[in-house]
Length: 207
Image (cartoon, rainbow, N blue to C red; front, side, top):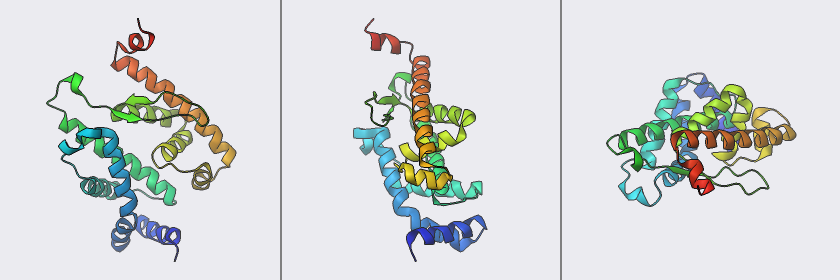
């Protein structure tokens, strides 16, 4: 049985409330989630990782626990990973808020996220997880499929072909959604940075 077939079977069982499938699915995707957790933690904390009390394994466990509690239904593997990505980001945001509750505002840690458009060199957006989630949520409100494309590309590095299969659209549609979604995110993140940092424009213009 191929891994894709196995995941499809387990997702069907998960959706239908089979307890055994929930446990088996967790074991089947644990490696993927562990790699994602380690990557996200490195992006969040960088050299300060030694001071971080949450381990990748704990992040994975909390993410999966919340996923089960939400009782989502999954049409396919890609949708499963798209939803669990959103859950993990929320766990990280909650952890970051608790960790930094006692810190001064100017000590707030920010995560570096590259959102370069295909074939073009765009500045890396230095943003907080809250800003990323806010911008993505606003994109979802106006263009939910384009937001899905952004999540699949940025978080999971899926190809246009994989996304097209997951969303049941053409590759050309995914390419158009990607360009729109990334450009929209860049503009929205710029607005959020201007709002959160009044000196942002002055820093970029040199005035």
